[in-house]
Length: 401
Image (cartoon, rainbow, N blue to C red; front, side, top):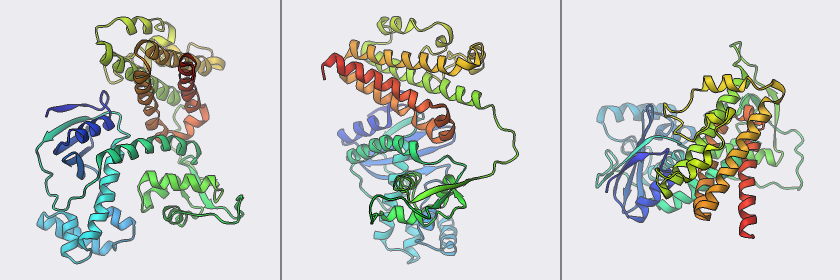
């Protein structure tokens, strides 16, 4: 089976579904210039996963952060692992520090984090090596791939809601001295309890993620629930360093430029898959927007040299008077996006519309994770989703729902 391409045109969830339904065995390799991950399959189910060129998913770090092993024992195990070339998990079992069942459970959690992390990747080359067995993987687990797809998709949707509530990265968090709760008892999950124990009024969100025994998603979800239940609060702001502060407007314009370019690119490629890239139907429709500032969003690949430079876009935007600049740009882009989605429905039906809508929704997750406070300040997230809701409303009206 030949399966290769880039995540810009084929979503990670679609790849997993294809391998699962085909009951394929082999290794899926996904990489960017700086990161590489491999996922092994057996009869369509995930049995192993590993990260190269990164320490984010290492088993040793996970065990240490979860308090399962001392730093001294971990250092001994890592040294022996390097000397023998055997996997760290096998080495830990050989040293009688863990049983096979304990390591298998930790490996399962590690594999899940590696795989779920890939749902957030917007680009990266992938290649499936059919019939190839994973290297240096004496301990295998088995995850039902379709269950992983469902959970990964759910996490993306949940992440959007989490990002609306969790505090900016420079805010210090503390346990509320007088929590305003609506009932006498609050039930906390184990994750929420352990994350809450790390909150001491001197740590920010990124610092809590760094020392949490869980991955970023679970930690942020726990903080989200603690905030919603009024159990923790912001008590101050981490003093900024003396480095020069970047031009805030330029930064938000940069996010908007690449976000909407990517969104229009997703819509265009999905349409081309249905009607063929030589079809002029959609191109003719989209051409009406190629005037003024909107001409910088033709729907080409955001990584392509055909995309106008951000510098030229910035110069064009700054011709707009400052007091109406952001409103003019945002309203134009929002209308353009919603109308293109509506046209997809009229031209290709509900299924393609929903596929396009899901693809466009995913585009917001990466900028949200990096610039939450700035995006909240300018209301970019709200305006972006308003345009999508407007398209959904039109579709419901046409369908008579």
